[in-house]
Length: 347
Ligand code: WQD
Image (tube, rainbow, N blue to C red; front, side, top):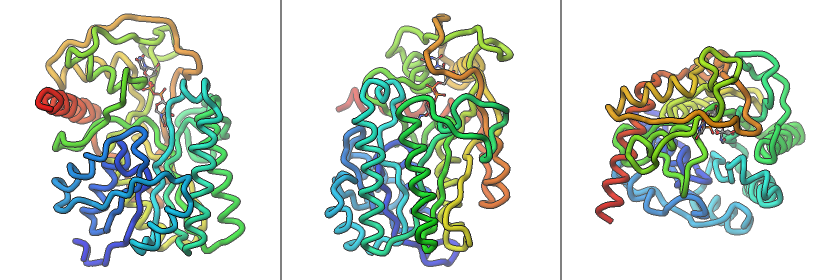
Protein backbone atom coordinates (compact mmCIF):
# COMPACT_ATOMS: atom_id res chain seq x y z
CA UNK A 1 0.00 0.00 0.00
CA UNK A 2 1.42 3.41 -0.86
CA UNK A 3 1.97 6.08 1.82
CA UNK A 4 -1.20 7.83 0.63
CA UNK A 5 -3.03 4.57 1.38
CA UNK A 6 -3.80 4.04 -2.33
CA UNK A 7 -2.73 0.79 -3.93
CA UNK A 8 0.14 1.61 -6.27
CA UNK A 9 0.19 0.63 -9.95
CA UNK A 10 2.49 -1.78 -11.79
CA UNK A 11 4.46 0.62 -13.97
CA UNK A 12 6.94 -0.19 -16.76
CA UNK A 13 9.75 2.33 -17.31
CA UNK A 14 11.31 1.96 -20.77
CA UNK A 15 14.83 3.38 -20.62
CA UNK A 16 14.55 2.79 -16.87
CA UNK A 17 18.31 2.49 -16.21
CA UNK A 18 18.94 5.85 -17.89
CA UNK A 19 19.34 9.29 -16.30
CA UNK A 20 15.71 10.48 -16.10
CA UNK A 21 14.29 6.94 -15.92
CA UNK A 22 16.31 5.91 -12.87
CA UNK A 23 15.40 9.04 -10.91
CA UNK A 24 11.72 8.59 -11.83
CA UNK A 25 11.91 4.96 -10.67
CA UNK A 26 12.93 6.14 -7.18
CA UNK A 27 10.10 8.69 -6.92
CA UNK A 28 7.43 6.26 -8.23
CA UNK A 29 8.57 3.48 -5.86
CA UNK A 30 8.52 5.89 -2.93
CA UNK A 31 4.95 6.86 -3.93
CA UNK A 32 3.95 3.19 -3.56
CA UNK A 33 4.06 2.01 -7.18
CA UNK A 34 5.71 -1.23 -8.33
CA UNK A 35 8.29 -0.28 -10.98
CA UNK A 36 9.72 -2.60 -13.65
CA UNK A 37 12.69 -1.41 -15.75
CA UNK A 38 13.03 -2.24 -19.45
CA UNK A 39 16.23 -1.15 -21.18
CA UNK A 40 18.51 -2.30 -24.04
CA UNK A 41 21.53 -0.87 -22.11
CA UNK A 42 22.73 0.95 -25.26
CA UNK A 43 23.50 4.06 -23.19
CA UNK A 44 23.28 2.94 -19.53
CA UNK A 45 24.48 0.18 -17.18
CA UNK A 46 22.54 -2.72 -15.62
CA UNK A 47 24.20 -1.88 -12.28
CA UNK A 48 21.82 1.07 -11.90
CA UNK A 49 19.10 -1.45 -10.90
CA UNK A 50 21.14 -2.53 -7.84
CA UNK A 51 21.77 1.11 -6.86
CA UNK A 52 18.02 1.74 -7.13
CA UNK A 53 17.54 -1.26 -4.84
CA UNK A 54 19.69 0.47 -2.22
CA UNK A 55 17.52 3.59 -2.50
CA UNK A 56 14.03 2.04 -2.58
CA UNK A 57 14.47 -1.11 -0.46
CA UNK A 58 14.35 -3.81 -3.09
CA UNK A 59 15.99 -4.08 -6.51
CA UNK A 60 13.42 -3.39 -9.26
CA UNK A 61 13.21 -6.08 -11.96
CA UNK A 62 15.27 -5.21 -15.05
CA UNK A 63 14.27 -6.69 -18.40
CA UNK A 64 17.10 -6.24 -20.93
CA UNK A 65 14.84 -5.85 -23.96
CA UNK A 66 14.76 -3.46 -26.93
CA UNK A 67 11.42 -1.65 -27.38
CA UNK A 68 11.72 -2.64 -31.06
CA UNK A 69 11.18 -6.27 -29.99
CA UNK A 70 7.37 -6.11 -29.88
CA UNK A 71 6.88 -9.75 -28.91
CA UNK A 72 9.18 -9.52 -25.90
CA UNK A 73 7.67 -6.19 -24.83
CA UNK A 74 4.24 -7.87 -24.88
CA UNK A 75 5.59 -10.71 -22.72
CA UNK A 76 6.92 -8.18 -20.18
CA UNK A 77 3.62 -6.25 -20.09
CA UNK A 78 1.76 -9.52 -19.48
CA UNK A 79 4.20 -11.08 -17.03
CA UNK A 80 4.23 -8.09 -14.65
CA UNK A 81 0.55 -7.17 -15.23
CA UNK A 82 1.69 -3.66 -16.22
CA UNK A 83 -1.01 -0.97 -15.87
CA UNK A 84 0.91 2.08 -17.12
CA UNK A 85 4.08 2.79 -19.09
CA UNK A 86 6.53 5.70 -18.83
CA UNK A 87 8.45 5.80 -22.11
CA UNK A 88 12.00 7.19 -21.75
CA UNK A 89 13.83 4.81 -24.11
CA UNK A 90 15.35 6.63 -27.07
CA UNK A 91 18.48 8.23 -28.52
CA UNK A 92 18.92 11.89 -27.57
CA UNK A 93 22.14 13.40 -28.94
CA UNK A 94 21.24 16.29 -31.26
CA UNK A 95 24.55 16.32 -33.13
CA UNK A 96 24.52 12.55 -33.61
CA UNK A 97 20.97 12.73 -34.99
CA UNK A 98 22.14 15.08 -37.75
CA UNK A 99 24.83 12.56 -38.75
CA UNK A 100 22.63 9.46 -38.37
CA UNK A 101 18.96 10.39 -38.94
CA UNK A 102 17.87 6.83 -39.84
CA UNK A 103 19.27 5.46 -36.57
CA UNK A 104 17.18 8.09 -34.74
CA UNK A 105 13.99 7.45 -36.73
CA UNK A 106 14.39 3.70 -36.27
CA UNK A 107 15.08 3.72 -32.54
CA UNK A 108 12.86 6.62 -31.52
CA UNK A 109 9.89 6.56 -33.91
CA UNK A 110 9.74 2.88 -34.94
CA UNK A 111 10.65 1.92 -31.38
CA UNK A 112 7.67 3.86 -30.06
CA UNK A 113 5.35 2.33 -32.69
CA UNK A 114 6.49 -1.10 -31.51
CA UNK A 115 5.88 -0.20 -27.86
CA UNK A 116 2.41 1.20 -28.62
CA UNK A 117 1.47 -1.90 -30.64
CA UNK A 118 2.53 -4.09 -27.72
CA UNK A 119 0.50 -1.96 -25.29
CA UNK A 120 -2.56 -1.98 -27.54
CA UNK A 121 -2.34 -5.77 -27.95
CA UNK A 122 -2.15 -6.22 -24.18
CA UNK A 123 -4.85 -3.65 -23.37
CA UNK A 124 -2.43 -1.29 -21.56
CA UNK A 125 -3.53 2.24 -22.41
CA UNK A 126 -1.94 4.58 -19.84
CA UNK A 127 1.23 6.26 -21.13
CA UNK A 128 3.54 9.08 -20.04
CA UNK A 129 5.86 10.12 -22.88
CA UNK A 130 9.25 11.79 -22.47
CA UNK A 131 9.24 14.63 -24.97
CA UNK A 132 11.44 17.74 -25.15
CA UNK A 133 11.19 21.52 -25.39
CA UNK A 134 13.30 21.11 -28.51
CA UNK A 135 10.01 20.50 -30.37
CA UNK A 136 9.35 24.26 -30.08
CA UNK A 137 12.27 25.07 -32.38
CA UNK A 138 13.20 28.75 -32.51
CA UNK A 139 11.11 30.52 -29.82
CA UNK A 140 8.69 33.08 -31.30
CA UNK A 141 7.91 34.37 -27.80
CA UNK A 142 9.07 33.66 -24.24
CA UNK A 143 8.25 32.09 -21.86
CA UNK A 144 7.15 29.09 -23.93
CA UNK A 145 3.66 27.78 -23.15
CA UNK A 146 2.16 24.57 -24.57
CA UNK A 147 0.36 26.56 -27.31
CA UNK A 148 3.64 27.85 -28.78
CA UNK A 149 4.01 26.63 -32.37
CA UNK A 150 6.14 23.50 -32.79
CA UNK A 151 8.81 23.11 -35.44
CA UNK A 152 11.82 20.96 -34.71
CA UNK A 153 15.16 22.09 -36.10
CA UNK A 154 17.06 18.75 -36.02
CA UNK A 155 16.30 15.06 -36.62
CA UNK A 156 16.29 14.29 -32.88
CA UNK A 157 13.69 16.99 -32.26
CA UNK A 158 11.72 15.84 -35.29
CA UNK A 159 11.53 12.29 -33.90
CA UNK A 160 10.01 13.69 -30.70
CA UNK A 161 7.53 15.77 -32.70
CA UNK A 162 6.56 12.81 -34.94
CA UNK A 163 5.95 10.72 -31.83
CA UNK A 164 3.78 13.48 -30.32
CA UNK A 165 1.67 13.53 -33.51
CA UNK A 166 1.40 9.71 -33.45
CA UNK A 167 0.16 9.85 -29.85
CA UNK A 168 -2.44 12.52 -30.69
CA UNK A 169 -3.69 10.37 -33.62
CA UNK A 170 -3.76 7.23 -31.46
CA UNK A 171 -5.78 8.99 -28.74
CA UNK A 172 -8.21 10.32 -31.38
CA UNK A 173 -8.65 6.79 -32.79
CA UNK A 174 -9.28 5.20 -29.39
CA UNK A 175 -10.37 7.56 -26.58
CA UNK A 176 -9.76 4.80 -24.03
CA UNK A 177 -6.08 5.85 -24.08
CA UNK A 178 -4.83 8.19 -21.36
CA UNK A 179 -1.59 9.85 -22.55
CA UNK A 180 0.51 12.62 -20.98
CA UNK A 181 3.20 14.17 -23.19
CA UNK A 182 5.85 15.84 -21.01
CA UNK A 183 8.10 18.42 -22.69
CA UNK A 184 11.30 18.61 -20.61
CA UNK A 185 13.41 21.73 -20.63
CA UNK A 186 17.03 21.15 -19.47
CA UNK A 187 17.26 18.31 -16.93
CA UNK A 188 20.29 18.58 -14.60
CA UNK A 189 21.46 17.48 -11.16
CA UNK A 190 21.29 14.14 -9.35
CA UNK A 191 19.57 12.25 -6.56
CA UNK A 192 20.74 13.65 -3.15
CA UNK A 193 22.31 10.27 -2.28
CA UNK A 194 24.92 10.70 -5.03
CA UNK A 195 24.23 7.08 -6.03
CA UNK A 196 22.56 7.87 -9.39
CA UNK A 197 23.08 10.77 -11.77
CA UNK A 198 23.95 11.80 -15.30
CA UNK A 199 26.92 9.86 -16.58
CA UNK A 200 27.15 10.22 -20.36
CA UNK A 201 29.65 8.02 -22.16
CA UNK A 202 32.57 9.95 -23.66
CA UNK A 203 32.79 13.75 -23.79
CA UNK A 204 29.47 15.28 -22.61
CA UNK A 205 27.48 17.34 -25.12
CA UNK A 206 25.41 19.00 -22.41
CA UNK A 207 26.58 21.91 -20.28
CA UNK A 208 26.12 20.59 -16.74
CA UNK A 209 27.98 17.25 -17.00
CA UNK A 210 30.75 19.06 -18.87
CA UNK A 211 31.12 21.71 -16.15
CA UNK A 212 31.07 18.97 -13.48
CA UNK A 213 33.99 17.17 -15.14
CA UNK A 214 35.98 20.42 -15.47
CA UNK A 215 35.40 21.06 -11.73
CA UNK A 216 36.55 17.48 -11.03
CA UNK A 217 39.72 18.07 -13.08
CA UNK A 218 38.72 15.43 -15.65
CA UNK A 219 38.50 18.07 -18.45
CA UNK A 220 40.82 21.11 -18.73
CA UNK A 221 38.28 23.89 -19.34
CA UNK A 222 34.76 24.64 -20.55
CA UNK A 223 34.19 26.04 -24.05
CA UNK A 224 31.43 28.64 -23.90
CA UNK A 225 29.68 28.33 -27.25
CA UNK A 226 29.27 32.03 -28.01
CA UNK A 227 28.97 35.15 -25.83
CA UNK A 228 27.39 37.36 -28.51
CA UNK A 229 23.76 36.28 -28.09
CA UNK A 230 21.03 38.89 -27.36
CA UNK A 231 20.97 37.88 -23.67
CA UNK A 232 22.00 39.77 -20.49
CA UNK A 233 25.60 38.47 -20.50
CA UNK A 234 25.70 37.35 -24.16
CA UNK A 235 25.71 33.62 -23.36
CA UNK A 236 22.87 31.13 -23.96
CA UNK A 237 19.94 31.16 -21.53
CA UNK A 238 18.08 27.92 -20.68
CA UNK A 239 15.48 26.66 -18.20
CA UNK A 240 17.45 24.13 -16.12
CA UNK A 241 15.27 21.82 -14.04
CA UNK A 242 16.44 19.49 -11.24
CA UNK A 243 16.00 15.86 -12.24
CA UNK A 244 14.20 15.17 -8.94
CA UNK A 245 11.62 17.86 -9.82
CA UNK A 246 11.31 16.25 -13.23
CA UNK A 247 10.76 12.83 -11.61
CA UNK A 248 8.04 14.30 -9.38
CA UNK A 249 6.41 15.69 -12.54
CA UNK A 250 6.08 12.13 -13.87
CA UNK A 251 4.48 10.95 -10.61
CA UNK A 252 1.99 13.82 -10.80
CA UNK A 253 1.26 13.06 -14.48
CA UNK A 254 0.58 9.38 -13.68
CA UNK A 255 -1.76 10.32 -10.85
CA UNK A 256 -3.52 12.69 -13.27
CA UNK A 257 -4.02 10.04 -15.98
CA UNK A 258 -6.21 7.99 -13.66
CA UNK A 259 -8.68 10.86 -13.24
CA UNK A 260 -8.29 12.80 -16.52
CA UNK A 261 -11.20 13.12 -18.97
CA UNK A 262 -8.72 13.90 -21.79
CA UNK A 263 -7.22 11.06 -23.90
CA UNK A 264 -4.04 13.07 -24.62
CA UNK A 265 -2.53 16.17 -22.94
CA UNK A 266 0.76 18.10 -23.25
CA UNK A 267 2.68 19.64 -20.31
CA UNK A 268 5.87 21.72 -20.09
CA UNK A 269 8.13 20.60 -17.26
CA UNK A 270 10.38 23.56 -16.50
CA UNK A 271 10.99 26.04 -13.68
CA UNK A 272 9.99 29.20 -15.57
CA UNK A 273 13.44 30.67 -14.77
CA UNK A 274 16.23 31.27 -17.32
CA UNK A 275 19.92 30.83 -16.40
CA UNK A 276 22.86 31.81 -18.64
CA UNK A 277 25.98 29.71 -19.23
CA UNK A 278 28.16 32.10 -17.21
CA UNK A 279 25.60 32.24 -14.39
CA UNK A 280 25.71 28.42 -14.28
CA UNK A 281 29.53 28.44 -14.22
CA UNK A 282 29.52 30.82 -11.24
CA UNK A 283 26.81 28.81 -9.46
CA UNK A 284 28.82 25.62 -9.92
CA UNK A 285 32.00 27.25 -8.57
CA UNK A 286 30.08 28.39 -5.49
CA UNK A 287 28.39 25.01 -4.96
CA UNK A 288 31.56 22.97 -5.47
CA UNK A 289 34.25 25.30 -4.14
CA UNK A 290 36.18 24.46 -7.32
CA UNK A 291 37.30 26.73 -10.16
CA UNK A 292 35.68 26.17 -13.54
CA UNK A 293 38.03 27.72 -16.12
CA UNK A 294 36.38 28.54 -19.45
CA UNK A 295 37.15 29.95 -22.87
CA UNK A 296 34.76 31.82 -25.14
CA UNK A 297 34.40 29.87 -28.40
CA UNK A 298 32.27 30.11 -31.55
CA UNK A 299 28.51 29.59 -31.40
CA UNK A 300 27.34 25.97 -31.73
CA UNK A 301 25.26 25.50 -34.92
CA UNK A 302 21.56 25.07 -34.16
CA UNK A 303 21.64 26.68 -30.71
CA UNK A 304 18.91 29.19 -29.85
CA UNK A 305 19.78 32.29 -27.78
CA UNK A 306 17.21 31.81 -25.03
CA UNK A 307 14.54 29.31 -24.05
CA UNK A 308 12.52 28.97 -20.85
CA UNK A 309 9.16 27.53 -19.85
CA UNK A 310 5.80 28.86 -18.77
CA UNK A 311 5.06 26.07 -16.23
CA UNK A 312 1.56 27.34 -15.35
CA UNK A 313 -0.38 24.50 -17.00
CA UNK A 314 1.42 21.70 -15.12
CA UNK A 315 0.93 23.65 -11.91
CA UNK A 316 -2.78 24.16 -12.60
CA UNK A 317 -3.66 20.72 -13.96
CA UNK A 318 -1.10 18.44 -12.30
CA UNK A 319 -0.67 20.38 -9.08
CA UNK A 320 3.09 20.20 -9.72
CA UNK A 321 5.86 22.77 -9.72
CA UNK A 322 9.66 22.70 -9.51
CA UNK A 323 11.12 23.41 -6.06
CA UNK A 324 14.93 22.88 -6.37
CA UNK A 325 17.08 25.94 -7.16
CA UNK A 326 20.21 26.28 -9.32
CA UNK A 327 22.51 25.92 -6.29
CA UNK A 328 20.96 22.54 -5.47
CA UNK A 329 21.23 21.48 -9.14
CA UNK A 330 24.97 22.23 -9.05
CA UNK A 331 25.58 20.79 -5.56
CA UNK A 332 23.89 17.48 -6.44
CA UNK A 333 25.69 17.23 -9.79
CA UNK A 334 29.00 17.90 -8.02
CA UNK A 335 28.30 15.28 -5.32
CA UNK A 336 27.49 12.71 -8.00
CA UNK A 337 30.55 13.31 -10.17
CA UNK A 338 32.75 12.92 -7.08
CA UNK A 339 30.96 9.75 -5.95
CA UNK A 340 31.12 8.15 -9.40
CA UNK A 341 34.75 9.28 -9.80
CA UNK A 342 35.53 7.70 -6.43
CA UNK A 343 33.66 4.53 -7.42
CA UNK A 344 35.56 4.43 -10.71
CA UNK A 345 38.84 4.64 -8.77
CA UNK A 346 37.75 1.73 -6.59
CA UNK A 347 36.46 -0.36 -9.54
C1 WQD B 1 22.90 24.46 -22.82
C2 WQD B 1 23.62 25.80 -23.04
C3 WQD B 1 24.93 25.86 -25.03
C4 WQD B 1 27.84 22.81 -23.69
C5 WQD B 1 19.94 19.93 -25.43
C6 WQD B 1 18.99 19.30 -26.40
C7 WQD B 1 17.64 19.09 -25.75
C8 WQD B 1 17.82 18.31 -24.46
C9 WQD B 1 18.77 19.04 -23.53
C10 WQD B 1 17.50 15.98 -24.90
C11 WQD B 1 23.58 26.28 -24.47
C12 WQD B 1 25.83 25.98 -23.80
C13 WQD B 1 26.76 23.69 -23.74
C14 WQD B 1 29.17 23.33 -23.69
C15 WQD B 1 28.27 25.56 -23.79
N1 WQD B 1 18.33 17.02 -24.73
N2 WQD B 1 26.98 25.04 -23.79
N3 WQD B 1 29.33 24.70 -23.74
O1 WQD B 1 21.33 22.54 -26.23
O2 WQD B 1 19.80 23.62 -24.48
O3 WQD B 1 19.46 21.22 -25.11
O4 WQD B 1 20.03 19.17 -24.24
O5 WQD B 1 16.31 15.97 -24.75
O6 WQD B 1 16.82 18.36 -26.64
O7 WQD B 1 18.78 20.18 -27.50
O8 WQD B 1 21.46 21.87 -23.77
O9 WQD B 1 23.34 21.52 -22.23
O10 WQD B 1 23.74 21.23 -24.73
O11 WQD B 1 23.40 23.54 -23.80
O12 WQD B 1 28.46 26.79 -23.84
O13 WQD B 1 30.19 22.57 -23.65
O14 WQD B 1 25.00 25.63 -22.70
O15 WQD B 1 25.39 26.72 -26.07
O16 WQD B 1 23.49 27.69 -24.47
P1 WQD B 1 20.54 22.42 -24.97
P2 WQD B 1 23.05 21.97 -23.63
